Length: 394
Ligand SMILES: *Cc1c(COP(=O)(O)O)cnc(C)c1O
Image (tube, rainbow, N blue to C red; front, side, top):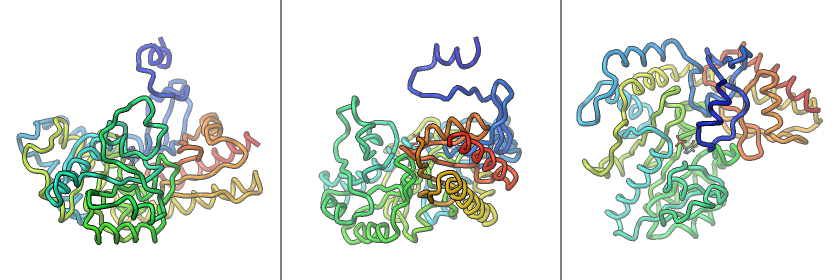
């Protein structure tokens, strides 16, 4: 049986996959079971920050794997402590908790925010306002926090206490946030919701409202964090400081990890016994994440911003050439969303596959999340292939 047949027979049918079985990768390039080469502009949905099988990352992970692969959180280990230190020093946050995914990080953030609210204003202070169009994960509380009805149907009842404000409209948040609100949770750039960056003035107003009404600001940086938008975290670009930050996707460079970062107000909220994760802070995963962070130094982040400019202007030119229209291109850094006129984003993704470039959609938009260290040569070749893919659709 080939890979695709076996998968279709035995793997639960939760994913609509493309008819491609990937077998190996290096840098931004990967190959399928037929030997066809692709340039990857997806990073496994924002996960492979350093591309496929980066040698330094792979060596750190495999070195740790042959030294000490897991201990449980009953003991101290070096990589987890070092990763927490690096994250705190570079984010300005005070403490880190490690889990295994974005949804799990957001669940922990919700728990911390509620405990903070209870201590602050009593047990009714447990409500969390999120934004319409947001995506916070697939577990029940993270799904309840997600402001998109399409993900909710069939799974009721949800944990109570979530409401959804209109993004970029502070009056909507003003009317939803009251004395029983413990937190406002936002993605600074909505990813799954269509790669839409929040307006600067809106983020300023949200931060001000949270300050004035004594409400925590939670930044869901699961997709935007770890260099993706050209700063280590998106909140830096906006000049605000959340009280809790969650991150996951790009942190492990391809291995599962999620982190909750706590600021001054929340660093001691969760006490021993309040929260835990069996697999959290896995030493091998943390060793890889340290390489990811070290590579995203000033030069690494500058590369993200420069590559972002090149890709955005070339995409715009390609669409203009074929359609005569200037496309909407959104997002920040190497989190890129684009409206494609005349055809569906899905058709562009399929054409990309035929021409050897892997891309994503976000709702009805084309979405690119290239590896953060994609080389100029890989970028150029990917754009050439996308241009051909576009040409095949007109
Ligand atoms: C992907 C994503 C999540 C969920 O992460 P998982 O690791 O799939 O649980 C949560 N929030 C945002 C903003 C995301 O992009």
